[in-house]
Amino acid sequence: MTDIKLGQSIAGSFTSTKESVDNTNPLTAAYFNEYDLPGLDSFRQFHITLQLPAGSTTSTTLELIDAATGDIIAQSIQAGTVTLSETTFPGINYKIRVTNTSLGDYQLSLTDGGKATSIVSPHKPNVLDNHTNSLVGTIGQSGQYFSLASGGAIELTDIALAADSQFYGIGPSATPGRIDSLYRIDPSLDRSQQVKLVSEIKDPQGNNLSSSIQSLEFAADNKLYALGYAAEGAKFYQIDVNTSVATTLATLPQSFLIAGDLVYDAAKQSFLATSLDATNTSNDALWQIPLSNPAGATKIGMTGFTDVYGLTLENGQLFGYTAHVVPGGTGATRIKIDTTTGAGTFDRAITGTQTFGIGGAASIFTPANELVLNVVNLGGATTIGSKYQGLPQGHTIDLSDYTGRSIVADITTISSATYTNQIGFYVVEDTIGTIKLADGTTLQPGDINYAAEAVKNAAFQATQTETKLGQNLVGGLIYAPVVIAQGTLTDFVAKNPTNGGDGNAIHAYFNYIGANSDRTDHFRLLDNNKFGFEDMYGGGDRDFNDLIVTLNVRSI
Image 1 (cartoon, rainbow, N blue to C red):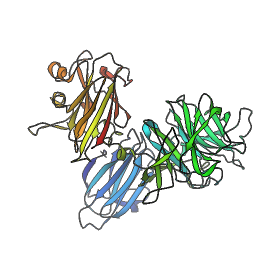
Image 2 (cartoon, rainbow, N blue to C red; image 1 turned 45 degrees about the vertical axis):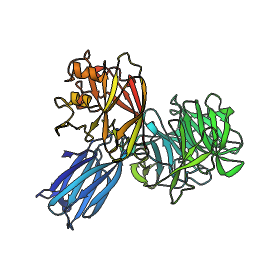
Image 3 (cartoon, one colour; image 1 turned 135 degrees about the vertical axis):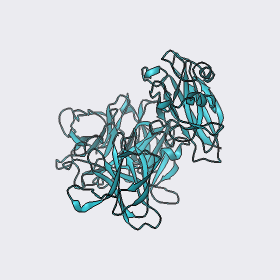
Image 4 (cartoon, rainbow, N blue to C red; image 1 turned 90 degrees about the vertical axis):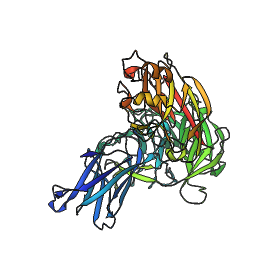
């Protein structure tokens, strides 16, 4: 079996021997090949294309398979070109199987669709609509959006992502009368074990809550907080994820009518929340709820939109989603929300949504027995240069989609290191780090002279605490980082151009592990176009804050 990676295209051929795809059914014998797609470190969209020779009329099957369970995730059957578009879960290994009833050659391509992000449903369930066939959402690490839903009669009202990468969801139990219950969701487990009931939610005295919980969110302390709807007013809770005990922290003002969504603002140590407003039931309000004094919640202002969910903070900017006001089309709308006035403005329409099934326990989700992750590629589309940054060794500024465009970058570096470090960016030819010299010779990470040539050809650079504005980049090129630990780029070329020696030597550390003499990853993606660096040989304390570089890349 052959490995295949995102961005790779493989020429294959169906062999001369028919084999049974299903060992229990010899009638399914066909020509087939399988390819391993190793697990990635983030949710990624990708597109699989199987191209047969021109004029081919045979029916071909293309399948994406969970390597651990053998479950078929997606399948496409047709003549000629066959395609699939799917999303990978972090750390899950897959197989791609191509099957045909006739001999012949083919081309299999796996293209990257960007970091997978998701939107919440245009219509989120609440206590008034019986929780039927809706999607609910949360915000993950580094501005990724996740939404989950069941396809059956029992629906989750909201989900939140904890620091241990497990989702927690709120939804009804099997008890008649809809008693809110807490669920733990772990997509990395076997499908029959992914969703587990923690227990029905009770107050500290063991009684059922008087309200229906609508929104969940973890704060910086990794404690779970929630908003609920009750006749006497909205409630703000803290929920123990081990016992499902909900402690009431505050009853919110009467004008906070029905909760929309909740997001934690670490900078202000407060929650931001949307709600249907008693003064204007066709307009959601934005509220601030201080974590230290939830009873002191204040209404910031009116958003100008209804059904505002999926709140997220991106570099201090608040965004949300609504089904309303999509200029020139249908679908969900992403809006910007001013956190000082509450006013919302149109950002862009969200289209191209994909779904990805992850099984849920039949006793909890019936009858469809499925959760759905709803995803759309926002990250790659909105941040210039971040196209492949969710991939391993993807800490590059990729401008390959901007050929002929004038691009500039503002570069800011900060450091907490004792070493004197310097960062530079050099041009690579592809996602594996190939460089081309002036005479046309190409070098790959690990080749003799790679380190020295890459450093000598750095297009721009910065010291460990510096701001450089308006650095000119070339549209169409890919820029990869290199950090010199214990010196400058010039020092490295003069003192250690082979990048050898132990931890006492000056070293160049690359995005590509094969170019690092300690074979260690020294970079972490902190956000789009923001990288953290570890400057110690062998990985040191792995805090990745010895140098942090942020690039604001824009087209002019």
